[in-house]
Image 1: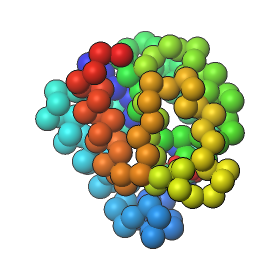
Image 2: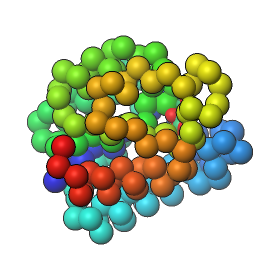
Image 3: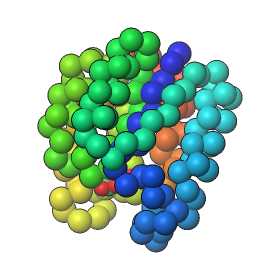
Length: 143
Ligand code: DQA
């Protein structure tokens, strides 16, 4: 099984940005945890971060070559990027939406995810463990 993990905009600033919401761990720590969990679950994982919508879309398209599942934290694009939503729908690769914070317990604009309807499910509010839970779901559930 080959999984692509995508971190969207501003997630490169984890550990610096709004630590009371997103925690104190930086992206390298989160990526190390993702790699360790993937190894345990015998999953091959590629991790990608971009602040740009187009690069995220290109990466989703590329995943059609060799990825079985996508795990995506689309950051703020979650709430308004119809282009990322369409990319997910077009590739038809089962995609799990993740968020560090509980997007339903914050500002109203965050409770709407335009990508949720084209994802198999959403894991939101478990800090960086959201990614690890998504990996477990990917390993254990046949989508
Ligand atoms: C986020 C939630 C989004 O609303 C926000 O724009 C982010 C991070 C999360 O992981 O909690 O950048 O996706």
